[in-house]
Amino acid sequence: MGPILFFIDTNGYYAGMIELLKLMYPYLRPYLRFAILASLCSIPLAAIKAYQAYFVKNVIDGIFDPAATTEYALQLGGILVGLAVINYPLRYFHFFGLRMVVDQATCDIRQDIYTKFQHLSASHYAKTKQGNLLSVMINDTAVFAEAFNHAISIFREPLTAILLIGVALYHDWKLTLIIFVVLPFFIVIFNVTGKRIRRYVTKAQEDNAEMTHHGAEGLTGQKIIKAFNLQTYMVKRFNKAQNNFLGHKRKSNSAEEHSHPSVELVAATAFGVVIVAAYFRAQDGALTVGEFISFIGALAMFMDPVRRYSKANTKLNQARGAGKRIFKLLGEPEEVNTGTVDLLNFEESIEFKNVTFGYGKSPVVKNFSLKINKGEKIGLVGLSGSGKSTLVSLLLRLYDIEQGEILIDGVNIKDYTLDSLRSQIALVSQDIFLFNDSILENLTAGVSYSEEQINEALDVSYSNEFIKNLPDGLQTHIGDRGLRLSGGQSQRLTIARAFLRDCPIFLFDEATSALDNESEKTVQAALDKVASHKTVLAVAHRLSTIQNYDKIIVMKEGEKAEEGSHDQLMEMNGEYKKLYELSL
Image 1 (cartoon, helix red, strand yellow):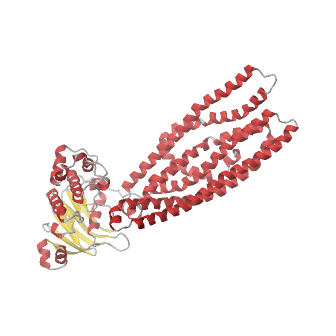
Image 2 (cartoon, helix red, strand yellow; image 1 turned 90 degrees about the vertical axis):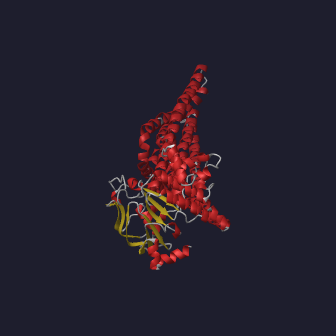
Image 3 (cartoon, helix red, strand yellow; image 1 turned 180 degrees about the vertical axis):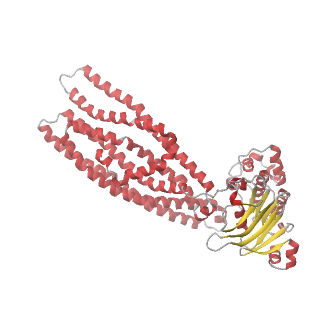
């Protein structure tokens, strides 16, 4: 490889490295001092390697010199041992230190990615496959870390190569010129194979993300998959993604494996020419045995940087694609949180004023207006797709409306900070979310509550009935997504969790729609009890659950079709009455 190759930007190697380092710098900065110290070890390490190559001449010529003494031999042996002793801690600190920095920085990146997940907008999740996001956090960060662990050698190899070439030049500058002749061949190899590797690795990483997505679907959808006998279909989908990955992976592996033996072939050819040229030099008496062996040793050692460069080049090409995906995700816009006002206490009312919103080109909610006074309980009913759940999402500010405004206590919710807005609202949804942890951890979610508060929440939600029969009580682990519990039990836990938050506003989004009749009665009783003194906006699947509410809004095609109490709406003999009779 040599100094020339190191300073020629083959295949954009250094440009790519600089680009990645710029992106990585904020993550490397906390450990920069340690990384610099570890990198500085490369100077004595390179010098030791070069001196070892040079020292071979003294060993060979000295040992075979008739005038050599035992003392001289011991001195030579002592120097070699001394070099190894010095090399040991330097090498350990250099490699271990830099790898520790890379590993820690990678952990920081992974943590930032996971934190990013928590702050991405709902619209981003609506258009992005879950498996792709998981692949970035798990697979791409692993590729990135591995590439940097290989690439750290570039801080040491240029100096090593220069010093080894210096040793070779010192022994015989004419023979050394042969090495410079083969340098262009190395450059061509790295350019050609690097482009191919980068092209196929990028496609393989995309296929890997698709595989991860199918894998996640296959795990989360087990109930439906088994119910519809979709096992074979799911396996076929996964295998299709896997075969695409395998095809691109084979091509990238093929390009990589062409690279390494090509480098070896060029190097072997250069060595062959050097040996022939050295023969003639030796015949002319211009080269001693010791000088020849030292020269060959320097060239052999010189091949180590070539091999490491070749490996690092391959890994860096893989890292470019992974790095772009990682930092593209980290650069995605988060939820808009420009509000500066803290909503400390909900005091008066919630008001939707001429609200229009759509997920695409067509509006889902059209010119909707509604005022909810503190303490009122409002029900939302209508056919699927009429915009009921969308209104819940808009009040939580999961999406920003296109026209109109939503006010709480007369202030636009966009002016409130997201944390303070959502701290006033408790959501109980048909989509039950529970951690793979204990019941207690699911209730508290890391917040400290007194035993009295927890017991009250369990009583109000009718959760004590089943928890007391569990062998470990509150410490019982409920499995992934609460699969060890029934649907009714899981929903009662989410109600208890909402009660513990003690929010003044409760949102019920079809909270009983997925339950059987018996579970529904228990859960509905818990909802009524929990929300007895709260302001409630409830999306109802079964209209009997809201017939005692202060007001019921009938939604149709995103608009308010009817409004009134249960009795008033029944007297209208309109949409509500049809829906009510259908729900019986």
